Length: 119
Image (cartoon, rainbow, N blue to C red; front, top):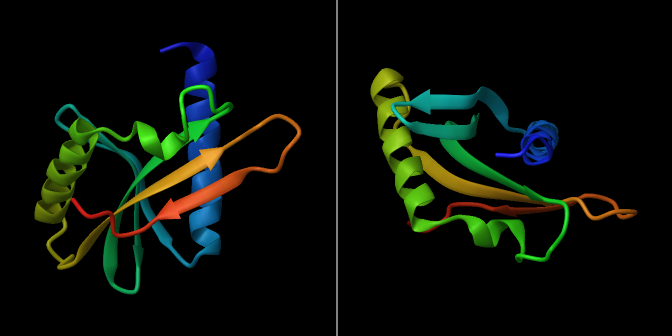
């Protein structure tokens, strides 16, 4: 992963946390790891655990950020959620979300929040 790619991802995750807090989410964890899997943001709202994948792009040459969430990534989100809920048994409900952030030059950031992704 290039430095620029890592920097874009980190900036996107920071922006995502700010956005989610504005939407009344409580941030529980960032970059939570289980085995070889990682969840960008784990949050809660209305007694529901939210597993959130953040995708950030600075151009649209390869499509919108949310289009890059693969079946493999979705499977890792499911496994990670199972592990997190085993370690934190107070959570009974889980929801999977994707937060897409587009950062185009000379334009305000665009947030597209896909809630309760059907897996």
